[in-house]
Image 1 (tube, rainbow, N blue to C red):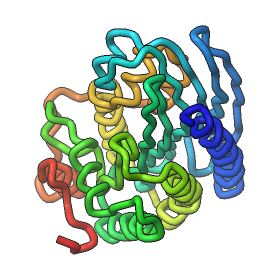
Image 2: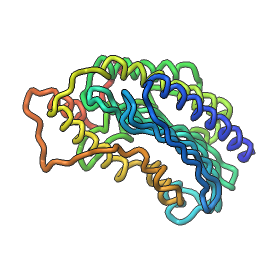
Image 3: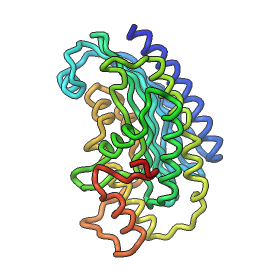
Image 4: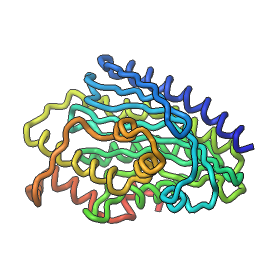
Length: 305
């Protein structure tokens, strides 16, 4: 049964990649695309689409992968399993815009199965603005809640809280962005229909390009100063730190023998670090940092608490 689930998820995620790449190209209007199909020595492979040099998007991509192999010691510890082999398929994307008033966005949906018969789905979408705009954060969360409300297997308040905890950098004591939703091991403990879980993942990922277009459209032509570009570089540096230090998907890809170039597609073209940078009191940069330093509980953007 687990083989059937993986095959169904694989077909659905391939379609998502194709549809969302087309939608992003249509929205941006100027994107160039690099396509790189690859095989994994341990089993499986993938299709990496790099999207860059656009009107909106400076660098990003939308990856599909379907891999399999032995569960090694590091992977066994990360996945908390005694199984011998795994299969995994997923589609993921990160988009880094030119304009610092346009946010970074990340999406991932995935399906895992083990040779002990267990399977589960995971994923989510989150938003990382360089400048937090409360109205935009609220609209973004409303989009995600609308998707969750269509599916009995989805729990927006729980998934939102999970994202707030997950996308938090303890070493900086700050959130990566304004959160979103995140879920994992959906179905692993039983009690969840696999088709319902897959349908939710497909619906969520299928909204990705339109959600981003709504967030980006109002700000793509916003005037930009050198100071704002400098702040963008610093916030991109924070993004790099999170992905390399804390992100489980990055770690899974690297310890499972994944393709390094595709895994690190999520990193921006340019980023910077400045020693002990402190924004000017009362500035928009200081307001954004204050919003991001509210702890793992995050902000209740929709007033549901």
